[in-house]
Amino acid sequence: MAPRSATLGIWLELAIWLSLALAAFALTFEFSGESGTYAWGAASWPRAVILLMAVGAVIQAFVRLRATDSEESSDPAPLEERRSPFKLAAAFGLPLLFVFLLPKTGFYLTTPLFLLAYLALLGERRPLVLIGVTLLIYILINLIFTSLLFVALPTGTWPGFYDFSNWFLATFH
Image (cartoon, rainbow, N blue to C red; front, side, top):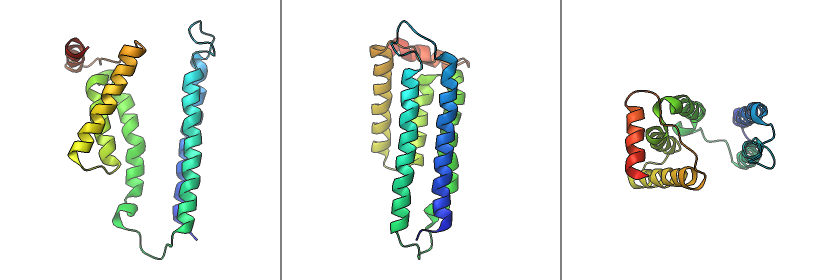
């Protein structure tokens, strides 16, 4: 049987994810009116992503609960597991920091730094993998939003960041 603190942590994490999904779903009602561009309304895609986030959280929780139940818990938890509350806080805090900074610092500089930081938080330490995965995700996001969907990404409002974003756009687009 898994330690009570391990299963409690899994249930707490699930509750946090579902609360975030519920809050995000509630925010979609601000722009859920009919749209001539989108057959099912402007909120349909965000709601689909929110639903996938909630389903993913439930599946992850049950997979982790099954894995925790099948493990023997007689060994003391390694140092890495004892730091998990800090990693959990960072895993939630880093995206919030990204969302806070994005309008001020812009997409073009903030996103690769966020991706690098998040990959490092997830435990990746190989420099080539960190740089390669960051570049791949960054290039794909840029191509999808700017070339396929024709969506302008935030350039930032703080001095220097706005200038960098405009230089980046002029140079690479």
